[in-house]
Image (tube, rainbow, N blue to C red; front, side, top):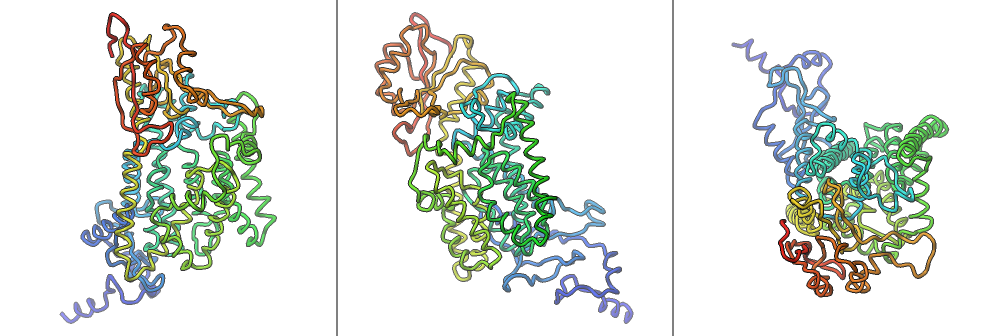
Length: 593
C-alpha cells in the first residue's frame, strides 16, 4: 500500500502548475505514455472554438500544448487566457497510432472550416460584378465546349488564360465523365474556389497563432465581406487567397513557417492571374530586401528564378490559347494603370476608398481596426503600411470598386483581432454587436440583394431544355451590359443577345456603346432594330423600370409577361427592383412554354 502511494505521488499530473519543460530523465518515459483526450474536454473546447470562427464567439478556459503534446496552462500574450484546439496523440483511441493533424492544424478544425466554406458557397446566391462570370466561367466554357462569349478584353488580349484554365480543367473532367449538367457547371467551380478559400483561412489562422496566440487568431476570420466574396469565381478572390497563403510563408518576426521561395512563388502566381496583385506586396518585398543580409543571393537565387518560371508558364499558356506570343500582364497594366481607360466604366473622386470603399468593406469592424492600429506591436506596422499604400495607389486610378481592395482585408483583420483580444469591460457587448451585424450583412447580401440576375437564368435553362420549340426560341436581354451570366449558366447553344458596351480604343470623343444608344431612346431603338417580325426574339428580359417606356412595342408585337423575379431593394436608374420575362405569343396559337 505504501509502495503504491509513493508511485502515485511520483506520477506527473496531466495539467502541471508550471509550463517549464519536463526533466530530461522523464522525456523518454513521457514518449511511452499513452495519452487519450478526454471526450468532454475535447468536445467543449472544439465546440467553443468552432463557433468563434463562424461569427465571433467565446472559448472555454484554455490551455496550450508543450513539445510533448501535454496540456499546460497558457503563458502567452499579455496574461490573457490562450484558448487552444487540443492537439493530442492517440495510441489506444479510435485511430491507433495516428495524430489527428491536417495542414498543421487540428483535423476537426480543418474539416469545420471546409464545411463552413461549403455552406458559405451555397448561401451566396446573388450576383456581385459581371467579372465573376464573364472573365472566368464564360471563358472556360468557350475553351471546353467551343461556344460562349469572349468579351473585348480577350480580343484585345488584356486577360490571361491561367485562371480560367482552372475551371476549364473542371469542365473537361465533367465532360469526359458525362456529368456536364448545367447545375454542376455552375456549382463545382464555386465549390473549388470555396475549398481554396478554406485553405487560406487556415493559413491565416495558423500565422496569427504563431505570431500571437489562438485568442487573437480566432477573430481574424470573421468578416461579412469575406463571406460575400470568398466563394465567387473572381480573379480578386484568387488574388486574396494567394496573398494570404503567401503571407503565411513571408519572413515575419515570430513566424515559424517562413520560406522565401514559397511566398515569392505565390506572389508571382497572383501577379500572373491579376497583375495589380503586386501592389500590396511592394512594401512587403522592399522590407524583405532591406532586412535580408544576403541581398544578391535573394535576388539571383530566389526572386529571379521564381519570376522566370511563372512568367514562362503564363506565356506558354497564353500562346496556346491566343495563338501568338502575348504578355497579357503588360497589356493589363497599360490599359488599367498607365492609360487609365478603366474610367470608361465609371469614375469616382480620389477619396472614394477612404470615405466609402474601405469603410464599407470593413463594415462594423472599422472601429476595432482603428483601435487595433494603436495597440498592435511595432512588427505589425508593415501591415498598416501595406493597407495605406494599397489604398493610396488605387485612389490615383479613376475607376474604383470595392473588390479591388479585398486583398488587404486580411491585413486589416489582424488589427481587429488584436483589438478584440485586448478588450476588457466591453468585450461581450462588442462581440454580440459584431456577431449580429456581420451575420445580417452576410445573409442579406448573400441571399437577397441582387439575386434576380441569377434567378432569371433558371427561366432560360427551362426554355432550353423543356421547350418543345427550342429550335426557334431566342432571347434578348435589354439590361445594362453583362448584367447576367451567359452560356456558362445555360450550357445550350440557344440564340441569345445582350446590349454590348466595349470601350472606344480609337480616341473618339462622341463614342457611344450600344447600351448607351439603347437607353437614350429605348422605343426608337427597338423599332429601328426589329423592322421585320421574323427578326423579333421570342423572349425579352428587362428590368421593371423599363416596362412602361417600351410598353407600346410590347403590346404591338404580342409580348406577354410570363415571369416576375425580385432583384433588389435598392433600384437605380437602369436597374429596377424586379426583372420581367416577356414571351411573344404567335397569332392564332399559343406557344408552349
